[in-house]
Each structure stands twice: as C-alpha cells, then as structure tokens.
Image (tube, rainbow, N blue to C red):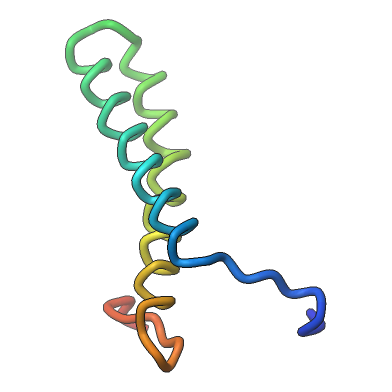
Length: 76
C-alpha cells in the first residue's frame, strides 16, 4: 500500500505538457513513416510507446481540472 506522505502528484501543467509532447511525437513519427523518411515499423513502435503516455497524461490533466478528482470520460 502506498503511503500518502510518499505519494507524488503531477500538476495540471505538467500533465498538459506531457500530453502535448507525446502528441507531437506521435504526429511526427506518423508523418515521417508515411513520407518514407523512417521505416514504417519504427514509426509504429514510436507511436505504440508515445500514445499511452498521451492518453494517461490527458486523463490526468482532465482529472486535475475537476474539483472532485474524478476521471471524466474514462468509461469505467
């Protein structure tokens, strides 16, 4: 079990920055793969790694914007 004293929270600005950077990485890797500048498998590998970072940081930014701390639009 994680203690509350050692639990670190990410700020809304940090989550937005992580979402923006990972979105730029996904778009750039896709564009480079489609134009043939990098191998398609390499582009797919980059997107597979960067897309979950985008989704998790977007959900964290949305959670920090609500007052109750609930994840909106997650569908659980």
